[in-house]
Image 1 (tube, rainbow, N blue to C red):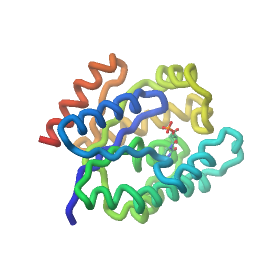
Image 2: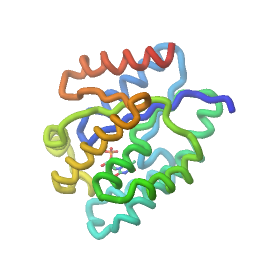
Image 3: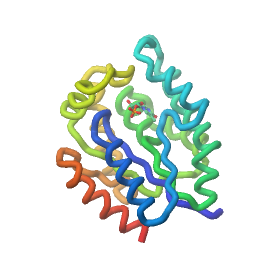
Length: 207
Ligand code: TMP
């Protein structure tokens, strides 16, 4: 199968990943490549509807099984409609969150057994793994403070600080487990300094 490049960005809420995702996209386009940017949950008509449900702060009664299945359904549709076809056409796909979010939030955050999440993910992604994942590492107290100060918070952001600390710790563990794929970037710095590190990694995989 002809294969493009699949880049994912990860981190706790407010870690600055969305700003860096924009810079990654600009960089890819500046070197003449076509970049497709998507987000999870979301990215397709159906997945955006799922996003509205799964993040709605009104649905405090949502059980963890529903939560896993909604994120998974959103991902399945995104893979089928956008990610798989784009990679098959040799394109560069940049995705704001992917499977590592499920391991960090539902696995470490909610305490769901990782083997179960792996089985569900394998069913959905059918071997399409990111070539590179940027984990924007920022202490969740700092990260969430930034985020909550600037916007209306969603159902996940409304979780207790303990939950966000478990998620953050989960990301740190995942980055230790998969050092070749997951690049941990210290996000407690200026946008320019963070970008410098990200650009270096990108250049090493693109050129
Ligand atoms: P964001 O678009 O602002 O990053 O919000 C998405 C939220 O959904 C964020 O809190 C992380 C969470 N999430 C999960 O809990 N599991 C997942 O699999 C994904 C993709 C996101």
